Amino acid sequence: MHSRLALAICAVSSLSGSCGTDQANPIAVAVSGAGVAFCGQQWPLTSQIVRCADPEVVDLAPLASLPSLEALDLAGSGVSDLRPLAPLHTLQELFLDRAPLVNIAPLASLRELRFVGLADTRVTDLRPLSKLAWLQSLDLARAPVSDLRPIARLSRIETLNLRGTRVADLAPLRALQRLSSLDISLTRVRSFAAVPRLSALVDVTASGLPVVDAGSLERHPRLRYVTVSAPPGGAGQWRALEDGLPPAMELRGGP
Image (cartoon, rainbow, N blue to C red; front, side, top):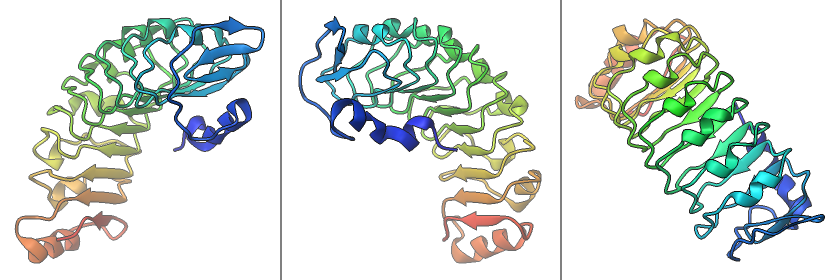
């Protein structure tokens, strides 16, 4: 599943004359008939996509003047205060990866969000996401998150990245019956048996998981791709694991 921003990131070029190029200019907060000055660029008031990876950009106030904004990529920026985003009710995609972010409370009002990226942030509390009923993709990689209960009722989630988090309990995912792709690599989950039986689950990445056995994999009827670390028993144990899998399931990683 690809977000609109991922597919159309170069649409920024039509607004700013550049595509994928980070600007080092200081942020300006001026708003004029020509648009909004943000991240060293001038954005038309009708902008639907904005991207900024400048670590010196910390003020999001200018974005409140973009009422049509649907996709916002702030990965790598210096943003820590999300309050200016609260009025942006049309926002569907928000990427905050690598931002020095702790508090995501303002996201609670952004009910149209479909894609949220919080990888490599300092976010621990997911409760502001609990009302985002349209959420389809959530990236929490390497964030110090441990409690998944706030997202337990977000039944539209299809992709969930928990790589490197402090998550040990996957039970809150039981109701996510649309979840098709899950990454639990390098978490505190100790066995593949902890993965809930989900009807749509197709792809699981579990590198670093201590215990993976064919019996626990067979519990997932639609599972097709499983990526794991090399087993301690080497090639022999790997072949034994492969031999115990259903024919339609592909094991990835290798001894």
